[in-house]
Image (cartoon, rainbow over all chains, first blue to last red; front, side):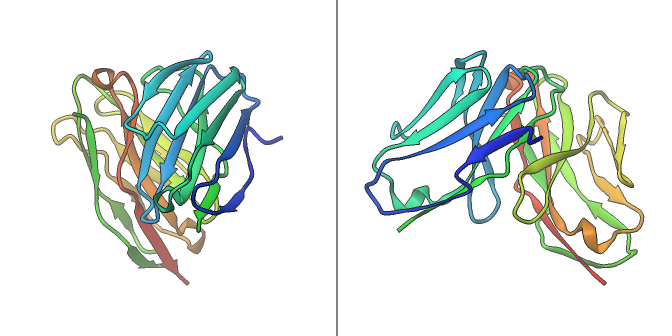
Length: 114
Length: 113
Protein backbone atom coordinates (compact mmCIF):
# COMPACT_ATOMS: atom_id res chain seq x y z
CA UNK A 1 0.00 0.00 0.00
CA UNK A 2 1.70 3.19 -1.20
CA UNK A 3 1.85 5.87 1.50
CA UNK A 4 2.39 8.93 -0.70
CA UNK A 5 1.66 8.57 -4.39
CA UNK A 6 2.10 11.00 -7.28
CA UNK A 7 0.91 10.97 -10.85
CA UNK A 8 2.31 11.06 -13.41
CA UNK A 9 5.81 9.75 -12.78
CA UNK A 10 7.12 11.34 -15.96
CA UNK A 11 5.80 14.39 -17.76
CA UNK A 12 7.24 15.68 -21.03
CA UNK A 13 5.65 18.78 -22.51
CA UNK A 14 6.25 21.84 -24.65
CA UNK A 15 6.99 25.36 -23.42
CA UNK A 16 3.85 27.38 -22.85
CA UNK A 17 1.64 24.42 -21.99
CA UNK A 18 -0.33 24.02 -18.75
CA UNK A 19 0.04 20.81 -16.74
CA UNK A 20 -0.98 19.34 -13.39
CA UNK A 21 0.63 16.88 -11.00
CA UNK A 22 -1.51 15.01 -8.49
CA UNK A 23 -0.56 13.80 -5.02
CA UNK A 24 -2.39 11.61 -2.55
CA UNK A 25 -1.42 10.32 0.89
CA UNK A 26 -3.14 7.52 2.79
CA UNK A 27 -1.33 8.08 6.09
CA UNK A 28 -4.00 10.25 7.68
CA UNK A 29 -1.56 13.16 7.91
CA UNK A 30 -2.65 16.77 8.32
CA UNK A 31 0.21 18.46 6.45
CA UNK A 32 1.34 18.12 2.83
CA UNK A 33 4.16 19.73 0.86
CA UNK A 34 5.50 20.31 -2.63
CA UNK A 35 9.26 20.39 -3.21
CA UNK A 36 11.30 21.06 -6.35
CA UNK A 37 14.58 19.17 -6.85
CA UNK A 38 16.93 20.51 -9.50
CA UNK A 39 19.49 18.61 -11.53
CA UNK A 40 22.11 19.04 -8.78
CA UNK A 41 19.75 17.39 -6.27
CA UNK A 42 19.12 20.65 -4.40
CA UNK A 43 15.72 20.39 -2.72
CA UNK A 44 13.61 23.50 -2.22
CA UNK A 45 10.21 23.76 -0.59
CA UNK A 46 7.52 25.40 -2.67
CA UNK A 47 4.27 25.09 -0.70
CA UNK A 48 2.84 23.52 2.41
CA UNK A 49 -0.78 22.93 3.42
CA UNK A 50 -2.11 22.06 6.85
CA UNK A 51 -5.70 20.81 7.00
CA UNK A 52 -6.30 22.23 3.51
CA UNK A 53 -4.99 25.68 4.49
CA UNK A 54 -1.88 27.16 2.85
CA UNK A 55 0.80 27.72 5.50
CA UNK A 56 4.03 27.99 3.50
CA UNK A 57 4.28 29.77 0.18
CA UNK A 58 7.89 30.31 -0.79
CA UNK A 59 9.02 32.64 -3.53
CA UNK A 60 7.52 30.72 -6.38
CA UNK A 61 6.23 32.22 -9.64
CA UNK A 62 2.46 32.64 -9.57
CA UNK A 63 2.30 30.32 -12.56
CA UNK A 64 2.42 27.60 -9.91
CA UNK A 65 -0.86 27.09 -8.06
CA UNK A 66 -1.42 24.40 -5.46
CA UNK A 67 -4.87 23.08 -4.65
CA UNK A 68 -5.91 20.93 -1.72
CA UNK A 69 -9.44 19.56 -2.16
CA UNK A 70 -9.12 17.59 1.10
CA UNK A 71 -6.48 16.64 3.65
CA UNK A 72 -5.38 13.61 1.66
CA UNK A 73 -4.75 15.40 -1.64
CA UNK A 74 -2.49 18.22 -2.77
CA UNK A 75 -2.28 18.93 -6.47
CA UNK A 76 0.08 21.28 -8.30
CA UNK A 77 -0.99 23.12 -11.43
CA UNK A 78 1.59 24.91 -13.57
CA UNK A 79 0.63 27.45 -16.22
CA UNK A 80 2.71 28.58 -19.17
CA UNK A 81 5.54 26.13 -18.59
CA UNK A 82 9.10 27.38 -19.07
CA UNK A 83 12.37 25.55 -19.71
CA UNK A 84 13.52 26.36 -16.17
CA UNK A 85 10.59 24.45 -14.72
CA UNK A 86 12.25 21.19 -15.73
CA UNK A 87 13.00 19.36 -12.48
CA UNK A 88 11.76 16.55 -10.27
CA UNK A 89 8.79 17.57 -8.14
CA UNK A 90 8.21 15.75 -4.87
CA UNK A 91 5.11 15.66 -2.77
CA UNK A 92 5.48 14.88 0.93
CA UNK A 93 3.32 14.64 4.03
CA UNK A 94 3.76 14.75 7.79
CA UNK A 95 1.48 14.22 10.77
CA UNK A 96 1.45 17.96 11.43
CA UNK A 97 3.88 20.86 11.52
CA UNK A 98 5.63 19.90 14.77
CA UNK A 99 9.37 20.35 14.99
CA UNK A 100 10.27 16.68 15.10
CA UNK A 101 7.87 15.49 12.47
CA UNK A 102 9.14 13.06 9.89
CA UNK A 103 8.21 13.81 6.32
CA UNK A 104 7.13 11.01 3.99
CA UNK A 105 7.97 11.60 0.35
CA UNK A 106 6.33 10.40 -2.82
CA UNK A 107 8.36 8.86 -5.66
CA UNK A 108 8.61 12.15 -7.56
CA UNK A 109 7.40 13.46 -10.91
CA UNK A 110 10.12 14.19 -13.45
CA UNK A 111 8.97 17.16 -15.53
CA UNK A 112 10.79 17.91 -18.77
CA UNK A 113 9.88 21.07 -20.66
CA UNK A 114 11.05 21.15 -24.29
CA UNK B 1 17.95 32.54 8.62
CA UNK B 2 18.17 28.85 9.35
CA UNK B 3 20.56 26.86 7.18
CA UNK B 4 22.28 23.51 6.78
CA UNK B 5 25.73 22.98 5.32
CA UNK B 6 26.94 19.54 4.39
CA UNK B 7 30.10 18.32 2.75
CA UNK B 8 30.17 18.34 -1.01
CA UNK B 9 30.27 15.10 -2.85
CA UNK B 10 30.55 12.83 -4.46
CA UNK B 11 32.11 10.60 -1.84
CA UNK B 12 33.51 7.37 -3.25
CA UNK B 13 34.38 4.50 -0.91
CA UNK B 14 35.19 0.83 -1.16
CA UNK B 15 32.88 -1.68 0.47
CA UNK B 16 33.48 -2.04 4.23
CA UNK B 17 35.12 1.38 4.50
CA UNK B 18 34.22 3.85 7.25
CA UNK B 19 31.86 6.65 6.26
CA UNK B 20 31.58 10.18 7.61
CA UNK B 21 29.42 12.86 6.02
CA UNK B 22 29.77 16.20 7.79
CA UNK B 23 26.78 18.41 8.53
CA UNK B 24 26.66 21.72 10.41
CA UNK B 25 23.70 23.96 10.97
CA UNK B 26 22.59 27.47 11.90
CA UNK B 27 19.23 27.88 13.59
CA UNK B 28 17.32 30.02 16.05
CA UNK B 29 15.97 28.15 19.03
CA UNK B 30 16.48 24.43 19.42
CA UNK B 31 16.05 22.58 16.13
CA UNK B 32 15.33 18.95 15.46
CA UNK B 33 17.90 17.38 13.16
CA UNK B 34 17.39 14.72 10.49
CA UNK B 35 19.23 12.64 7.94
CA UNK B 36 17.24 11.59 4.90
CA UNK B 37 18.43 9.22 2.17
CA UNK B 38 17.42 9.19 -1.49
CA UNK B 39 18.10 6.00 -3.46
CA UNK B 40 18.29 6.28 -7.25
CA UNK B 41 14.92 7.01 -8.83
CA UNK B 42 13.11 7.28 -5.50
CA UNK B 43 11.84 9.92 -3.08
CA UNK B 44 13.59 10.81 0.15
CA UNK B 45 13.08 8.65 3.22
CA UNK B 46 14.00 9.29 6.82
CA UNK B 47 17.21 7.58 7.90
CA UNK B 48 17.46 8.89 11.46
CA UNK B 49 16.71 11.91 13.61
CA UNK B 50 17.54 13.57 16.94
CA UNK B 51 15.45 16.11 18.78
CA UNK B 52 17.71 17.47 21.51
CA UNK B 53 21.36 18.03 22.34
CA UNK B 54 23.48 14.88 22.87
CA UNK B 55 20.76 12.65 21.42
CA UNK B 56 22.07 9.96 19.09
CA UNK B 57 19.94 8.85 16.18
CA UNK B 58 20.67 5.44 14.67
CA UNK B 59 19.28 3.18 11.97
CA UNK B 60 20.62 0.47 9.62
CA UNK B 61 24.14 0.86 11.05
CA UNK B 62 24.17 4.64 10.54
CA UNK B 63 24.57 6.99 13.50
CA UNK B 64 24.58 10.73 14.12
CA UNK B 65 24.92 12.66 17.39
CA UNK B 66 23.32 16.07 17.98
CA UNK B 67 26.23 18.31 19.07
CA UNK B 68 24.94 21.68 20.23
CA UNK B 69 28.38 23.04 21.11
CA UNK B 70 29.66 22.54 17.56
CA UNK B 71 26.24 22.87 15.87
CA UNK B 72 26.91 19.61 14.05
CA UNK B 73 25.13 16.36 13.19
CA UNK B 74 27.69 14.27 11.30
CA UNK B 75 26.55 10.98 9.77
CA UNK B 76 28.74 7.90 10.32
CA UNK B 77 28.70 4.23 9.41
CA UNK B 78 31.38 1.77 10.35
CA UNK B 79 31.25 -0.44 7.26
CA UNK B 80 29.45 0.67 4.11
CA UNK B 81 27.89 -1.65 1.55
CA UNK B 82 27.26 -1.21 -2.17
CA UNK B 83 23.57 -0.90 -1.33
CA UNK B 84 24.31 2.28 0.68
CA UNK B 85 25.04 4.15 -2.57
CA UNK B 86 22.58 7.05 -2.52
CA UNK B 87 22.27 10.77 -1.88
CA UNK B 88 22.20 11.77 1.80
CA UNK B 89 20.49 14.95 3.01
CA UNK B 90 20.98 16.61 6.37
CA UNK B 91 17.97 18.67 7.47
CA UNK B 92 16.63 20.71 10.37
CA UNK B 93 13.29 21.88 11.67
CA UNK B 94 13.39 24.90 13.97
CA UNK B 95 10.80 27.05 15.77
CA UNK B 96 12.32 30.24 14.41
CA UNK B 97 11.52 29.06 10.92
CA UNK B 98 7.95 28.03 11.74
CA UNK B 99 9.17 24.42 11.83
CA UNK B 100 9.72 24.48 8.10
CA UNK B 101 12.21 21.74 7.22
CA UNK B 102 15.43 23.10 5.72
CA UNK B 103 17.49 20.63 3.69
CA UNK B 104 21.20 20.67 2.96
CA UNK B 105 22.43 20.38 -0.61
CA UNK B 106 22.83 16.60 -0.40
CA UNK B 107 25.96 14.42 -0.57
CA UNK B 108 26.16 11.66 -3.14
CA UNK B 109 27.82 8.46 -1.93
CA UNK B 110 29.20 5.81 -4.28
CA UNK B 111 30.31 2.51 -2.77
CA UNK B 112 32.45 0.23 -4.95
CA UNK B 113 32.53 -3.53 -4.57
